[in-house]
Image (cartoon, rainbow, N blue to C red; front, top):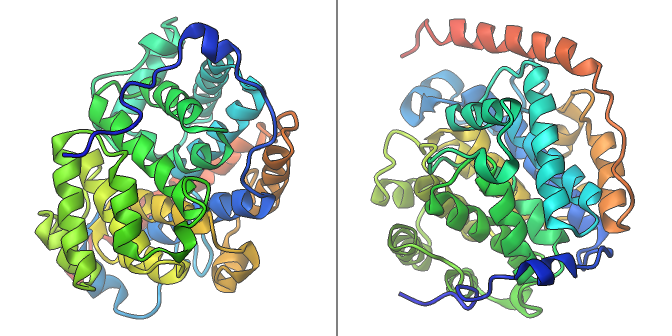
Length: 373
């Protein structure tokens, strides 16, 4: 198994304090593409969350995937909310990793007070520990869930180098998940977004999918993750469909929330449909299972090098949400690109918004009790 060139690169406290807060190398368009891509993947994947692929086929058919959460419109879930909170914490930190951890911890506390409809069990326990007084570096629980991966794409674009990226991913991950597999998976997703944006390797845009995967595998840690990526490479080289790769990874009934299931198949969908946001996100969704998170991660990676105006117009126009709207994310992208202070969020709207969201989720749950099965 290849050894990551970063395995021995752990910044000291003195190095960390010397990190300079300056605009990232990524362009504003790349940052906005990452934010919008993740939000759109999240929103179009949300109506199918938790449904096995065969049942989803019977319920939704084979038509192109569009918004279907509230009629023909979509809303975001915790995936996008956490991604945006991570971006806001990066702005508030001004390059200081300890401030980043404290800021993200307070944002997670506030997010839970808004009574969100969907909270992963590990994340819920970690935030409750934060409210009980545990510091951010002790609040995480031992879990290899995919929550940290959904916070990672934006860090891949805004961190200035790989040492800083590793440090900030570590802090973001261990706030909620302490299993090293969760951290390794989140770091690889951040590297994937960075690679796709041309920040990890300037020649990346000219590489084939297998060449890109070979580069990315240099940063993969853990035997399970590395072995899964070898399977991904095999099926990429055969131009196989996402369903074939998923079957080989043991995901016949859908992608689970286990980090070493989510990350390899998300990377496959990104590379198999390289540069095609709709095709990559749709392929991830049609696999079933944790569709909103997997599609969100795929959208965040692909969006890092997709001009926002070239994203599916029906997806952009159909996303209706407050206070984290696409317009709000555009302002956030501008702040990230220019290293400005965090932008304001209309927090008082969140309980009302979350109450409406919860009612819609209940309606979807009731619908699933009826045929076709």
